[in-house]
Length: 163
Image (cartoon, rainbow, N blue to C red; front, side, top):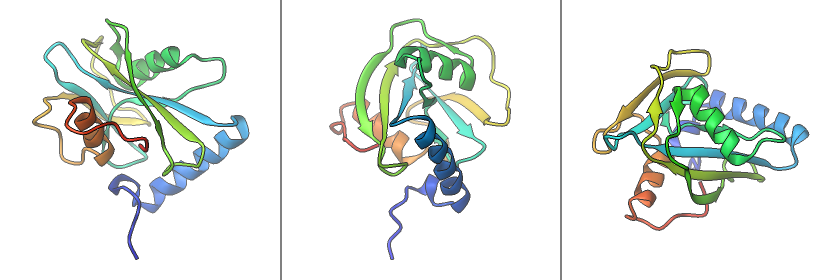
């Protein structure tokens, strides 16, 4: 039997938590919509986060709440996950269907250049580690989705429709 889950979702706990959270969202929202961003500092390094509940290094982001615009949600997630402030208008890169999470989840993926970190992000219950990394020196455990998005941003591969 082949495992069609990406490495960061092969852990039964990660899958269970993801299912429970999306179960809640199914009741609270008709469709789930999230934002995620490739955030680059002035040196061209990308900002990545490590969550407490799922393995690997990810780009920051999260689900949109009711009455929240995509850009409001993006700014909130960047602030909460990394103490990041946008200095330029984010550019929508692509919209992905995240069918591995649920049959109704979509992700708006943005590119944010010249982000500024107001202070180092201290570990908390959700985010256990963060950092800016050179594109040729990503940390071990960087997720396959993060690698795919970076390849798409660099035009090495065309954008996929699935996250």
